Image (cartoon, rainbow, N blue to C red; front, side, top):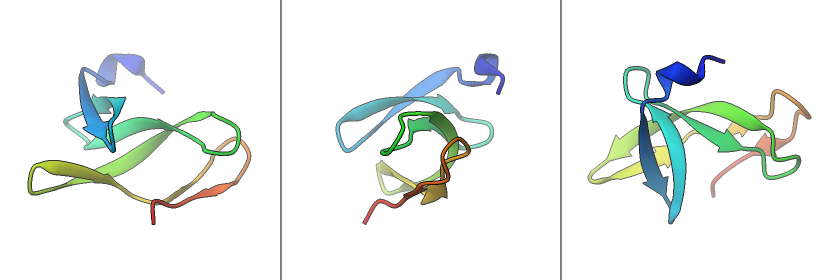
Length: 65
């Protein structure tokens, strides 16, 4: 993971995340182990919505239902 790519930040549900605007990817922690994962996000109206993801560290499924 190249931290230099994360040149911006976005807010999702009141939380601030490092953001790579070129790839539309945010660094988000796993809800189980806290490991930072690169997560695709989409912009819907004026808000960002993350994709569900499996943690690359512990395998926990993180969904945002």
